[in-house]
Length: 360
Image: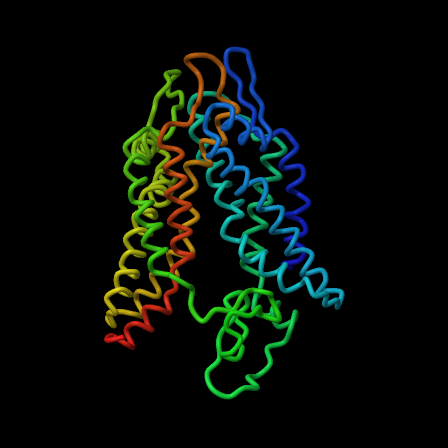
């Protein structure tokens, strides 16, 4: 099932990126886009970092992930066990966070709802193929048994060593303690008992995210036409506009993704990091669960930047009917990326280590 869906996603990404994506019409004129035109439009309008982020998360990482996943699952299916299987499967798993087909699908839905209020919008073949890709990517995530795939790549042998072992961070294989610093024989990852400088790196990334969070919410994130008048809106302003348009479901979704989740990530991760610094032994199970939740939901905050990327190529008619990214768009995307990296840097096991040795 996972092989079929991963292969279908990879094949559908070709028309999704090459065929017409969205078409708008106004005043007798039409504007049409293809998926890569969003990156080029952002770049040309003076938002190169936003264009690069879109290109990586939507145009580059998804094909890489599903090509790697398809190659690994196909090799296992035919009984081949080449040496590259482990490293390639580890790469596919790493890209799961950054290949944002599902997140962009929600951004597309929000963009369509915003545009449809003002002008006619057509979802073209490319967008339909992309929607299919996003759905299939969710099916792949739900059906892929990573532990089983790792066992098929190389079996988990029982510990043939005395004393404590060490777990590979890439594939969870148990290795002897003296494997510290070496490469895992199954996935090729460098084996570390704990992530180096986990708490300082996490706190540095969180501080940068907090500093950028204020301009990301105080300044307009985009300008769109509302009743044929260019209207700049902030993150919260966009949520209010969706509510006024009676799109309450989308308003709630954007509120959770663009406002609540970034705050939750910064507050929750700060709680965990400070707990580790203080060597607190209170609520460690709850803090670990919070960390796992943050690890899962953080990527969904990219909905607003992706919404902007959707409508920019098809909203360039005249001085009254246009769409633009705002000054908050880049810092907002930076907040999402920095907090996601902070979650990746933090090692929740250190909370338990330090709580077990409060005087160390």
